[in-house]
Image (cartoon, rainbow, N blue to C red):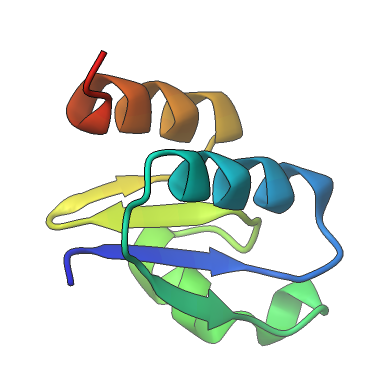
Length: 79
């Protein structure tokens, strides 16, 4: 599986990305990270920052919601 989404369950921006992944029927690894930003060690190791959502698509790491949505639409939309 090449897509991995790092998120927290209560985050609105994360929910928007999860909805887009579901809309496109894309399988992805779902990684729920700690609520406290300093505890998001895995997120920091991958993206260099502590905010979510973070989407990893192969070697590409995206940290801004709009960038993630654009990437998904560009790379995976069939329309």
